[in-house]
Length: 192
Image 1 (cartoon, rainbow, N blue to C red):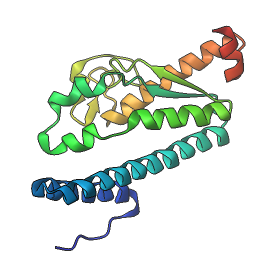
Image 2: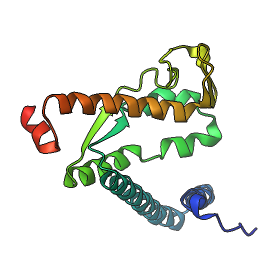
Image 3: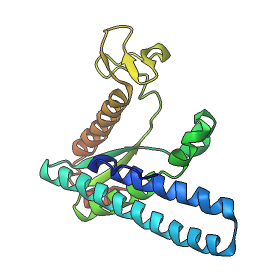
């Protein structure tokens, strides 16, 4: 059974799916040579994810530098795996559990620091339930992947709305820094 080649934007997921299929096949064999091959495959997959995360982090920091962004905001994802693991269907657990988000965040952190850009982790509480336009918070605003505000009627993708709220919180942090006279990461670190 030959698989079709992926589109460029889906190639890393497609390649990881191939590793997943190969690993399942080798695990079912259970021989010592199969275990050796699985160990080698694990290293290849780790290097693939590391390369993908380096490319993404480089693009994020490059965008920030080109657009004079002084603070890059991230959702504080501490404990996210344990909080969401029970909600994920079994067939999607591999993609959920193997996502190297912390590695991506650390790559962006060190590259941003080299460029003189601050990285800030914001509290993600209610970002997907808060309307970006009117700041109304309600569980009823979010329905799966759709966001519809009960008060002002604003409609968009729920994840995009949450990202806009994280950006807004990051801007608030930046304005606080600027009002205290902090212009760069060196000034901020001296104040702490």
